[in-house]
Image 1 (tube, rainbow, N blue to C red):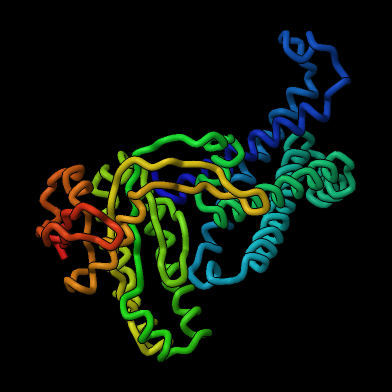
Image 2 (cartoon, rainbow, N blue to C red; image 1 turned 120 degrees about the horizontal axis):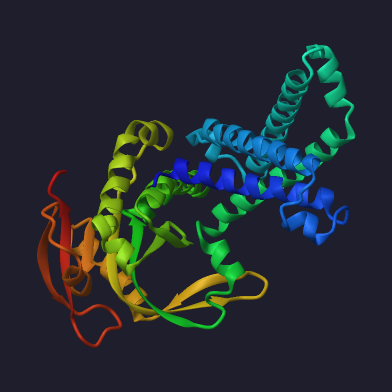
Length: 357
């Protein structure tokens, strides 16, 4: 399922829940239990449920359009505060227009003697419209805030924290990819601290859409390095973990003119991967996050360190090599049994190349 379809689905579900909750709160205490649930619902409540669901669907679709229009590389590079403010204002204005339009049209259809100005005046001065708009504005701000915070934690991480899934440590089979900027020290000296940081920002913005497409999770940003992880099955599925790296590489290459004009250099990345069993736990009090513990991560990092020595952009462990299916899309070359730093036993390492370029 594409990213945009997921966003539209989320907006529709969220607004349908919010719309029906509004009606329940509106009539709560006015009717007894039997009238609520035993098919004796008052006609005005039925009408309000219908109106609320129409408003919810229209708002969900229109706000999805707002999300799509604002989903531009330039806008996504703005600060968290700027994005939150602009999207919230866009949500509120769009919602106001949709609510007023729906109720004006509804008023004209019910009573054909009402003209446009009369229906508009009645709608704008209605306490019910005001209550619905204020409630909708609050829901808009809440949905937008949760979506942006979810992006800051990483897709799915906020849900895991709320659910308490990793409050007690648990064991999972996962794969990890360490991606690092090649010749980072030389580039940093050439650009200086500020421009170098801007370069890293741009590169990591460009990785975002590729991450979602191939079901990866961003675990950490460490300087000019990014650490990604997959549940083992998701990484193996359709060669997601391999396809991610080569599409990210291709995306950076497609933006070579942008990077060359802005920074005088086109960034090149190298990656190392490993898979295995790790312990997952929720850690921290002032800053909560999901942490992965185990030698799997250390080995993946050490494998990535070997990229320069063997002049290969993408290296993987023998463990991962044995897990991945042979689809014919990638070529594997054995580098050898390498004794990595901090390891007692040598690790088999393979290079990976995209057969189709």
